[in-house]
Image (cartoon, rainbow, N blue to C red; front, top):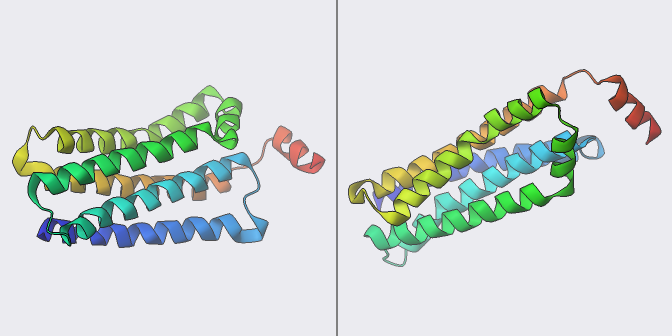
Length: 178
């Protein structure tokens, strides 16, 4: 159960990201453009997933679940919750609008900043579920959780530093029209 107890730390840290995301979301009446909405939702999605994934083994361990049974259930829950949130993210109108208006270089920057984390999370959780490395299940699960925490941090970083970017004339005209 020691491995599961270690997962409380990333879950607690993720709570900080969720808090920061919520503070950013409500500042000055909420986000001002679709880019902010997209990044805030991504920070919150990663943060909430880390909290769920980090606490699932702790809760299940309380029911005397252990070994492969514990990690199998945690891996399946982690995959379902993670990809459920990713589908919700991908189908949100604001996210589709943001990608549609992003130029090629901006879309590449977003992809390079975002996609490594879902790939690591998914890969580690699939290995937990398939169990080709029985002695490494806890480490793989921890890798997925920490990748989620790093993903939340990366999206928060991109959000904060993206907010300072100068507006284009088109963006200023859109805001003036609203």
